[in-house]
Length: 301
Image (cartoon, rainbow, N blue to C red; front, top):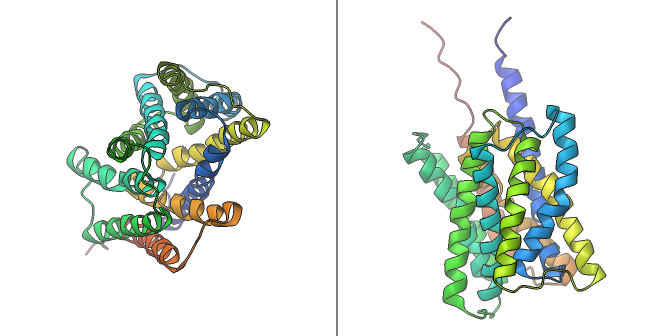
């Protein structure tokens, strides 16, 4: 049997990239649905994972023959993702949406740094430039959307939002490692099953409103469950095909999508500065893909 040709490898890379972009755009719906959900911050995360579980179980049985067993690495993915959701939701509540979005989008920097220092995946200089562009674009766009609201407790909100980037970076790295031996749907099932009780425990400990107080809130929570399956499932699948540092940059299209939806649905201002930030972020994403492309092997002499 001959090895896969460079053309096949390029097609596989493009397919994984398209799936990743689709998943990131789907996750961009998250802030809209969280705003519509009528429950506490961690409780909303609990319902998101709970409503996703039945679909994830079906997908795991269809794609891998069953849900398998909980493993240490899938436990880590669940705990880190649950903490990511809790910290992000509370960061938005205590600080401004702009600063919470900016600080949580530092994930690519952390993923690249950890992959470099721990896994010896040294990035190219051009890739580092692309990361800087993507983060700068997200920063410009989010800051321009922030308005004048500072939140209930800016210092606490900023700290929680910064920790969101840490938890999401750890989640990315854990999923990337888990994908070396397990299917994406199985990983998503077990990470959701372990993350949901954690979020419920946080919600109860902080005396949150657990049940959504309106029909719209329930619909939003169900929508978050569907978004979780499609969006995070696509990202988890792509993490098995693409480097984690590259993947973490591509998901920066999320604030671009969220900004556009906020403009269309909530009539939030989307002016020249936001457009500029979105253009810079997307340019960084494109440049990152070009910088991370496989290098052709030198022809033997």
